[in-house]
Length: 199
Image (cartoon, rainbow, N blue to C red; front, side):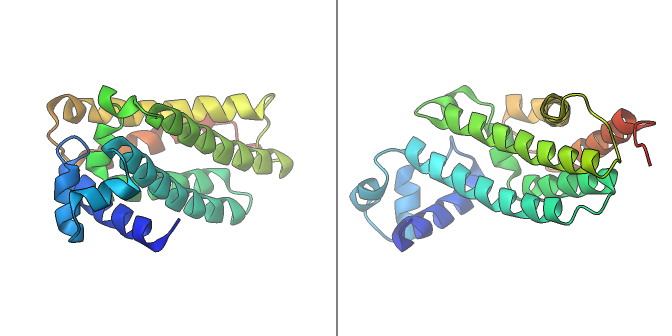
């Protein structure tokens, strides 16, 4: 990605994180960049293509940090899962308005829905790799690691959705919901693995 596109993504992310995808216009982003709207359209022919790159950039940042947690696994699965939950809560706090927007219908057009599915698949892969490490270490035993990881990610994301659905409907962000999401996810993790850790 060239420097100009990176600059556009950085500026767009600031505006999206403050106002949301829907309430941000390409004109406003062009003004923030100090360029013409036509110049912005040279790099991004429509807002959806810019949203897609912004989401991809965020996803890549999160994945880098998740891989660090995965690499630091030391035989304590619950600790690693807690670190993953804390990391996602940190990003959710910073980009809460994007989190409550990602389930809106308009964002699913122009390949964004496919990108969101790919991001979900990456989340499952990270947890699957962690579960595989825990199985290899003799910490847990799963018949189907991939299925266990997929189910766990669905539970965690479902809790996030349930705690934020009011904000999604109203469009009024309440970032304090992040703490409720995190506590629900940690409780569910503890509940799911209660009595299942082998050593």
